[in-house]
Length: 256
Length: 318
Image 1 (cartoon, rainbow over the protein chains, first blue to last red):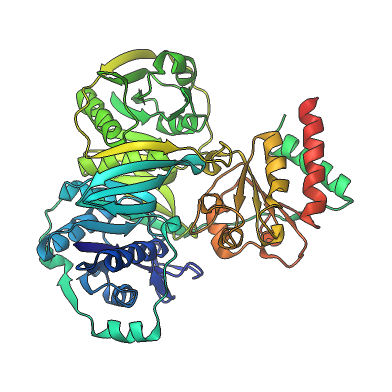
Image 2 (image 1 turned 180 degrees about the vertical axis):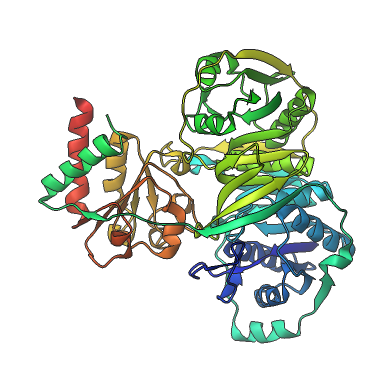
């Protein structure tokens, strides 16, 4: 089997995001592999352990720095990497087309894993576009996965904790959720070994993607303001509870 | 007049309240609003949909009745209707189901899609949405022959704008889908979805164990609230991952978020900072959540929440 895993280099969840020139963030912060992509890599590597004769290829698109996230995927157990180098962060449509083209040029995928969302642009759509481009079935938000005789059974999270049990045949595209597995963080020897694994670098411009009239551009970025005037509610438990109930009724109007 | 489509989400044959904010966002003087319904509830939904300004209700059906629960077939049915009616702009709820369906539709059309919009300007093709885990708000310009938008539930306030709606049948033929839905497993943890709840009671480290969460569930039950949790409570195995609010859990936007025994990390805030009101109950006056709340109580949650439950019960019984 050939399993491709798409990963993204994103600012750390705890990073303070500052805005430069109104449309970009200051990238001088710690970057990490998008948390949901860790579940994607983990699932692919587990399949390799389970089935043998499986190659796991991590793919990323980003600036030069993104290579470190690709190395992290290799340290987690991916066999080799494909690095699509870009000068800018393209929109979701371009990203998906670039990933498709790079994968097409590389081999015939049996499964493509991506994280269910990226925590930077919060687009929630790459896996669907990739699947549409490749003519494959797709699900996202997968929290359980099994493969038997070319048949994939996944459980996808729905509202209020319900799950859809979905069956597909290979090849397919799967967006992984947090509940799917617990990623194993790489050991030092694995990190050392990953340094020697191969990364194929492709320039985004060299992929010759078709020009499209559809696009999404950032006009402005601004910090999300969190202005709340914290007011203390004092008193005995009885008094405090009564105050909260009154606030829920009179101010928030969520109870009769 | 430009036609705008609104994909309506229903639950057990009823239009979910959160749709009305989406319709409000889609409305303008210069357009005709088409509501897409897939579950055969068109006539029943007419009164409420027209109250918010829908002009036509497109009752999409298959050869066997309502469109089946398969997301591929549902997306295809909506695409058929859009094509046949010449609709190029579609709005829907960015709920879990909406995110899936809208993404399938956008991918099939290779059209731009923005999910989790908190504001839209359809005339100027701009939207606002959170990025970087809610730390920034981006204004995006969307260009393309088709444009698809998912609105974050409860972020746009619904306002009435009565019109006369007509129900139009739109039969489609279901062809093979490339995946099958074998089963929908319902969860044991109640039926209120975190992302659509008006009130959320959420528990963190202060809950100490799984059993203690019953204190929150009992209170939530009285007022139809949902119960959420911080990452600590999920990682400790006290509650399932589906309840996690935060950066790597659910992003929620309730009218009121009551954080019980939650310190309020940056990552937790990423998931609930857009709540209409935040009430923090915490023993620790230094907890980060205290300063970022609207109201806070410095006390043991086990002393406060059960009393609240009693007061709420008395109030509801009246």
